[in-house]
Length: 267
Image 1 (tube, rainbow, N blue to C red):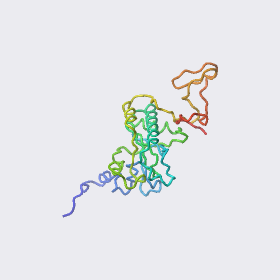
Image 2: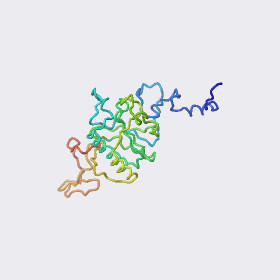
Image 3: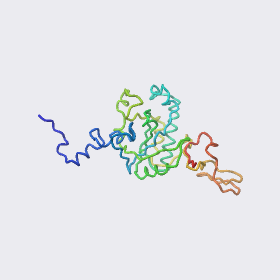
Image 4: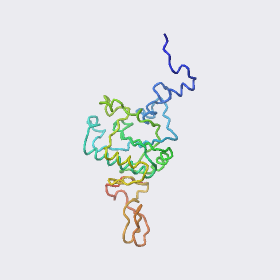
């Protein structure tokens, strides 16, 4: 007896819509649709459709682990291993990025960071906003910004359901492909930081651990303390100094302390 397929009663258009972004789709790349990244890149034989609107922003290769260096031979063995130094580093990174983006662009629904080390996924950060317009504002606003000495590359991502993007084998036990898996292996933020971030979701707040690594694209700090004497420098919320300058803080990024990570840099 022939096997009945639920798609047998569908029209051609309905059938194509039902398989869009799945393994049955021979035209569109299912990995790009689910993950927002594909190991074949522009050489993929299937289409990568970059959305014109989405709730999710991809920050490409944004997180840099202080422990895992993909150029070293032991990188594969270090991925996913618990390390107190890296956890502290990651917690500070997570809270800073979450706070900056939510305060500046809009409420964040979830923020996910990949610990995969494949070339197309390493350091990828996915930020899902509550509202599509906030995601669009984020991509536009980060176009000329840097973080921790590196330019920020952001784009709208087709990923909307992270349950489909995550590696189930990794979450249940151990993934046989390790860091080179093509599904997301997501890093865990500590409970303390998670509660601080999501308890304040949708409201503006400043983390006590924040280090301000975001900068704008003219290379100058506009977040430093207000000057005394003659500078008249302006801080975001602080008072300007006395004297006649009336200018902004013009410290180049090379002269900054190590705690300021987001900035602009016009070259």
